[in-house]
Length: 142
Image 1 (tube, rainbow, N blue to C red):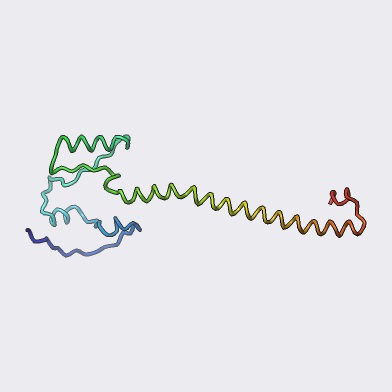
Image 2 (tube, helix red, strand yellow; image 1 turned 30 degrees about the vertical axis):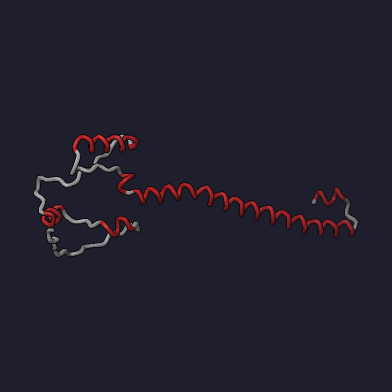
């Protein structure tokens, strides 16, 4: 087993995304410092990211890469790499209609309650007006 390489760095700033997957695992450095730490030459790549014109093709392209190159090449889609993040987004999408439904239900209850209270108050006032001699048509005009 090989001993880990250790190098001292000067921290220029902290980039926070509020996503634990990123904040706990990733460090942004210059390319020269990374090559020095990993003993990677200037003309050697350790990672290649592809951008596809259609995201629906990601699984098939990853399968083709795995099939063509085999081990040690690993091809993973963004959905596999950040599965926790996408699961969280799907949860948010599924819970949003429920939250909106509860908000609408509470708003409807408040509107109905307000209208019922107005009717009860106005009924009492109409009774007072009738006892004072106002006609039904006169009360309707009010």
